[in-house]
Image 1 (cartoon, rainbow, N blue to C red):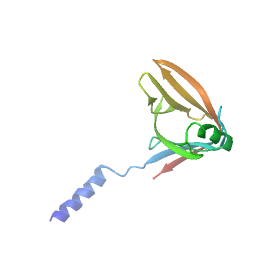
Image 2: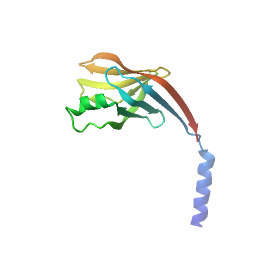
Image 3: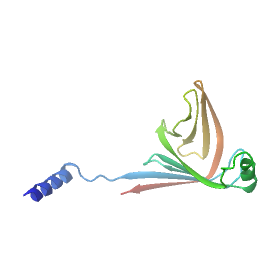
Image 4: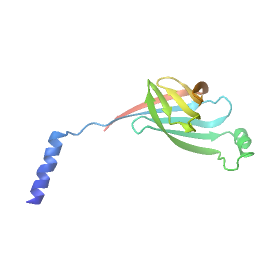
Length: 142
């Protein structure tokens, strides 16, 4: 009897809450140059469904040695993940720093440029940090 009630409950759930299609959008920005460093690989992957940005990069030897001199933990090949959110057609990473001073990476949908947003005591500064030569967009439905 209990199995029968459970089976009816599951059927009612499917009737009341039909299966929804999950849509996700992934933007891959690759072949990105940089204003001060040189890279063999420099790409940003924006997963707008999971609200995650992944940056993968490989330094050129000269850039790697420049940072290695002052920080032995620097790796030639690295990646990092940041949480992101959308606001007014822009994609921003979560704030990194303190309430009085913080930075965010800023992306605009459909644009090749990547910016650094810096806030110091409510004064906002935005500077271009990279331009990507290739942008791929993927939309998945499941």
